[in-house]
Length: 360
Image (cartoon, rainbow, N blue to C red):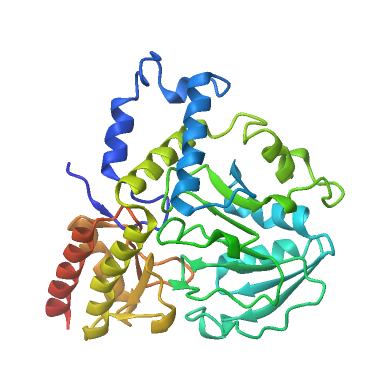
């Protein structure tokens, strides 16, 4: 069977070159006589892999020297607790609720201190990004939190909120490495890699060094302290070794493609193919306010649930898989991450045109 066009929101499509390279190294990684999957994380060979991965990520994102890169486990969801445990010094934080994941992070933070919802787009099913130019930021807030790209709802912050001098913490899981980023604008950014970077099981956190201290909330477990991981180079315990190895290959693939500037241009071009069709279609329509549209996740509907289901079924039979929308919103969603080639989006649009003619 040939490979399908996989529009999954995560775990998601990976670059074919990376998969082939990993396959070639599966039984014998560079003369070690074993797979990276079997290798001690304390070995010289593995240390070189994780060091190179970090160096390539720093080069890709232009990460300043005063930021630590941590390769963690527990998914982005574990960060919902880890962030307040480590950063809520005054036990106050402000959250901007633009979707399910921001809401979950806010609810989790409420267990540890006063988590204020200072803006929300829940009133219109998270179909837009609220105006964040003049928010009621709490005077003693330790940080302001956003989910920068909302996988389920297909919205993206095109402009970071005005935090009025407070530290910004961002979950970038579904837009990680999709375009250039100024890391210095964030106190911390983090994301699960299973959308745009690698296999599920790795979380990358990029944190300003001054925030990594012994001063954490009482009762914070050793494994949930950023300092534990920073002090041990992400090797306090066995890291998700194979996942990090694949991430490293994706960083190298991105560098070979010209880095994040080129990737950003490619992603804009790719998303335009689908959005332009949706804007002209008489059957399908996008669900997000135009100015807040994500380049990575594109939700759309026909307005008829039965027709939506028919579309998903016929699309799958034609080799376009995982187009069903999230269970909380229904409809369809095409996730078009870095590794989705533009041909995949063009062919999807051709299929949608054909479906429209047959079903209008």
